[in-house]
Length: 243
Ligand SMILES: [Fe+2]
Image 1 (cartoon, rainbow, N blue to C red):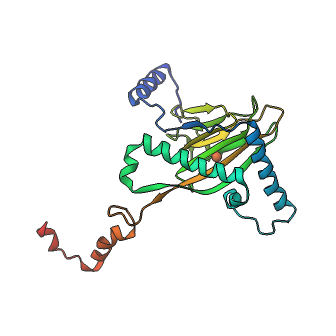
Image 2 (image 1 turned 45 degrees about the vertical axis):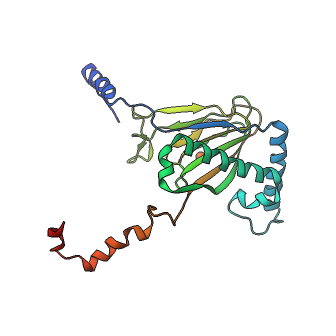
Image 3 (image 1 turned 180 degrees about the horizontal axis):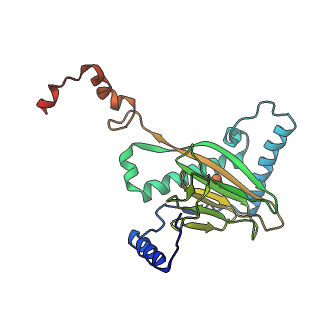
């Protein structure tokens, strides 16, 4: 954390900050999926049904992911497919390097529903299990709580296990809009402001992983390192001179 004691310190700090040219580096995408209020209401009916069946014990062995129920609920199935379509199309179009990585596409790893009552917020967190974190806003009234994303450079004070207050941390707020999908790399820490509306704030969040083609010649999987692993016993000092 920067601690400016004197005016000179502050000047130096500003020079240093400018020299570093710190700015937001992480991509964040927002895409309106085109679903209207009636469609979202129908999705909420399905989500309610899943939740009620679990709480009443009708669903005796609940799945870990909301996506495991998609085959029984048409709106859930539609948005499951739509999210993958939009995320795959967007990242392969905007990050051309992905085409060289043998990524066949994306898949949902786990999905869940966030329901926040008025006054509730969501603490800062990351999505460590995924490549892309995506959130779709099913119900988001005015003032229901922006999502706040933090640039990771110096964001965490690991000694105190809290946000550092570092001047290098950049926070960006995005207003939730019903029918909109926001997605970003998994490493971006984020939280949600308190819900100041008089209604529930409901979002559907999913962790998305990349699907790699294991048969492509340049895919980095265990066999990529097999030759080097063999050197553990087969390498000889005289091999160096041959190179
Ligand atoms: Fe999150």
